[in-house]
Image (cartoon, rainbow, N blue to C red; front, side):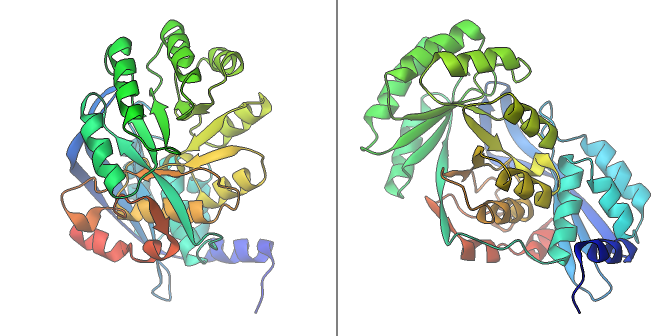
Length: 347
C-alpha cells in the first residue's frame, strides 16, 4: 500500500515507540587544542527508538559547550519527560525546533522510515591536523596513508610563529595538496587581515574557516569581499535559521555544516539541496552512531564538491565507539560497517 506524504506523516504520528537512552562521558585519546582552549572529553546521549515491529532507530545528542545546538542537561530532561512509550507525534514535535535533540530524534525516526538514498560511491576526506609544532609530524603520517586535503587548527599561538609553521607545513606537501586553516573565531580584525594577506600569496590554502567572531556578520562579509582567499563559516551556522540568514546576505564563501548540531537530517538535506550553497559536511566529534548519521547525510547530497570534514577518528580508546578510521576516502560501504548496536552495548 502506498501513502501520500500527508498520510505517511499522520500514520507515523499515531504510532507508539519504545524509547531508551544512555548517557556517556568519554575521554579522548588525544586532547584537541583549539583557539577556544583544550578539549579532552566528549559528553553526550545515545537514543534508541523501537517500533512495534521490533525495528530500531538510533540518534546521538552531542552538543558542544559554548558553540550551540542546545544544552545536554535540558535534552536529557526532555527525554525523561517523554517516558518510555512516546508517540511519533510527540517525538516529531520535540525534534522540530532543531539542535542536537532534533538531530537525534529526527535521525532515529528517519531510520525507521528508511535510510537516505546514497548518491556517491565514495567521498574524499580532509585529515585533521593538531595545533602547534605537532602539525609537522602529524602531516607526514597522514601523507603516508594518502591524505591530500588537511585542516589545521590555528589561532592558538603567536600569529607570527604560526605563519612560519604554515610555510614549513606547505613546504612538506606535494603539488595538488590543499590546507584549510581553522581559527575557531579566535582572531580579531587586525590579526585576520594579516593572516588573509599571507594566505593570498599561498594558493595551497583552500579556505580559512571561521576567522573571527561568528556574531559579527559585517566583519565576516567585509573580510570575504576584501581578500581573494575563500572564507568559510562554521560556528556562525548552527541550524536552518542561520543558514537561511547567511544565504540571504549573499555569503560568497563556504558553509561548514555540522549535522549533529543542526537538527533533523531530512531538513538539512532539503535545505542544502534547495540552495546554491558551497557546503562541507563536518563531524562534531561524535561516536560511531552520530558518525553514521553524518555520513549518510553527506552521501545523500549530490552537490558536494569538497572533502568531508570527518577525518577525526579514532577519537576514543575503545575502538568500538569510533566512527570510521581517518582515511583519505570514505566509501558508502564503510557506513554499513558502523553498527549502532555495538556502540550501544559498549557504553
